[in-house]
Image (cartoon, rainbow over all chains, first blue to last red; front, side, top):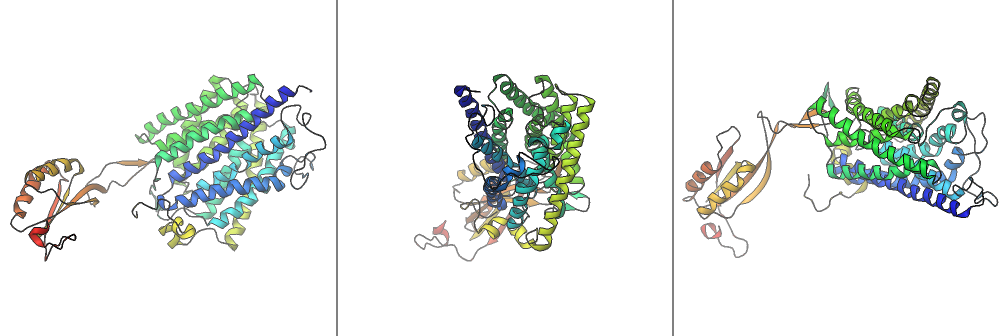
Length: 407
Length: 112
């Protein structure tokens, strides 16, 4: 490959895509802030900011090398080097003229932290800050890259035939499994469940949450579009269309389902529906026809209200619906690759299921174990007093909205 | 001197305010309050579960007045604040020892 113009265009697109994925952290921050109570808004943003920081630096130190080790033991685990160093003389030849070594790193690094932002929403309003950061550090630097390597780093799932275009399993359901494990050990917010009753704890700023979801959708064009790993016009443009349609269909499916189930037009549900549709298309955005993308999105949107209520009924308190959006719809999106699109087939469905189960078990075990250790050593939850007063005042010594009168 | 506490519907606030202005009562303190009781407030559903229907949003007006003018004000509020439905609100009258204006230390009738 000697065409440096094409190399520049390809590389440029991946860098733009990396920037778009960065914007998803804005989206996560505002979405989560909007769906928690005012007294915890600073805390949730603090966690999101720190995850981004920890994610980027730890991925630089070891995550990237665990996820793309070059060589591995039986396709299960491998490690290339600490930190980054440009392979000798590699530029246009590094990835066949599609992107540079640095671009490869930064694009993947932007993905890495999202697995932890998924957890941060689910554990909001009651987890100890430093315990959370420790769990995230281990999640993003060890568990996420190893399971990610199994497919994207040439590992055993890749050799098997499992397919995950942009991370319905590798990113979203991994984050979802992690969220489930931590929330299970953490327990629900005080007052959320009393006997059989579910007591809603509404978010303090629904418009902000909506801004967050729209920012996430905005960033998703880079999340999926950049996962083509080149600027190939045909594939990237199809991925854009599928991404847009799946999110839209998710909103529509959720709108009808929520209206039918609860006789309400709950914006927080429809926002989850959009994200569910986007997660659902993420495994196969390059394989689907637009029509199939709409179907996948609608089904994800319909799944959301059922899933949200289900988790509440089994007392998994998830303030933002992360388990429903990322875990359940992540599984759905991964299976959809075996049902729809150009790779559909019974064998493929089997590979998808193997990938879902193996990565699910591995992530659950790892996150459960480290969270359990953190719970026994550092403690997982803030004290009851802090939870009632609000984490902003107690852990951050500042209210989110200083000029407003006390709640 | 009396203090009239009137808890009224938010939707009747403009009517009550206009009616009070007609009898030269233009100054009061406003609170946003919530009533708690058996009457159903607005139905709220969040992520599939109903909640908060035991709270009712209302406005409380605190009016400082002379003992002589008090019955007239109460009468005006009773007429302008009523819709006839359950939940129109309540009026409570307090007797006051003294009322001061902070700017110039006027007292009682001169202070309102």
